[in-house]
Length: 121
Image (cartoon, rainbow, N blue to C red; front, side, top):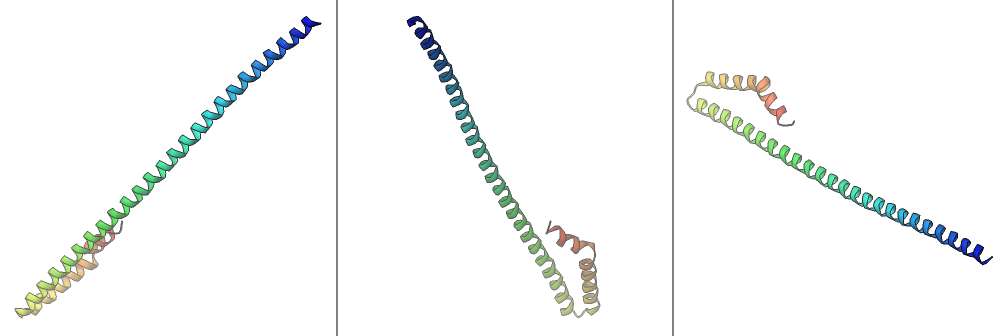
């Protein structure tokens, strides 16, 4: 009977060792899952941050592009105005008509329309 109790105690100790080993494996797995989740969240946050930076840079680029388009348009209009005023001062009204018709044709045609639309891309 004592020997039988020793065998039972030995079996119980062996089973406890197996259970402890399984628990330690489960703890390793849960810590690995926690680490993976933390790494995944960090990578996702970095992705969102870089995406926001890219959007900000794209908006800044569009703003600069639009400013350049407006400046160039202002220069063109100013140049036409100077040409018209110069021609009027020299009393060459046919030249004024030609300058205005050419400017209107250029503005209504592909030149200015394409320039303005390319500023909004």
